[in-house]
Length: 214
Image (cartoon, rainbow, N blue to C red; front, top):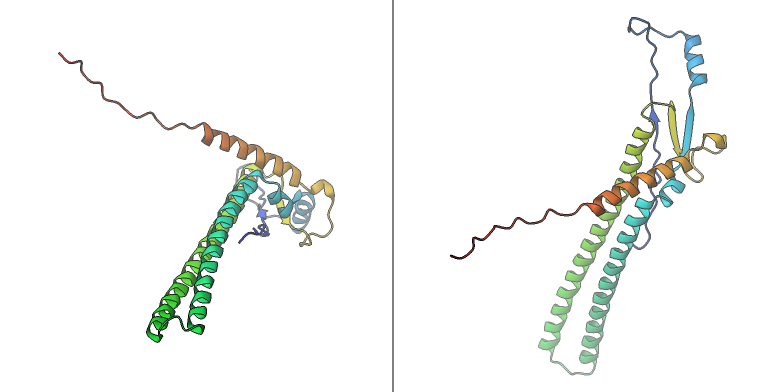
């Protein structure tokens, strides 16, 4: 739970280009027109690993998640060690003849119940942390895809591709790499949104005016 995986999913936005006549009606493109359009289409790409690892929103969410995961680990470790001490104490008492068979049976049954409760609690905590991690990654992915829609709303790029280290794009013109541009825009937007939420103060409670005593 301590290690948080980077989202490594590809984000691709494809825009279908159309051709219209002067009257506004659509016209079919010939094979030559298609080749010309494809050749003139602009393409860009970004590295999803680099983008996420330097995205301030991811850094903040990851820090909060890791702090919570650290506390959960500490709690489970503490309860697990306490259970182990109980088992050792039970074994020593039985070996040294310090308890009756009835008492030993009662202690054993109690330890079994504690162990079952611990396993259920551990599975619940790990499930909750895994769910929170997935939600975190979903939030990052959603934030990036929504920003890409705004960033490319004028379709300056016909296609925006994403790649990762060792990903599908192995060789490309560095001039087509917009990772730095996207990162700058994402962090700027996140800082602005974060500032708005921080400055949003709750409304002051309404107080009834009391009439002066006559």
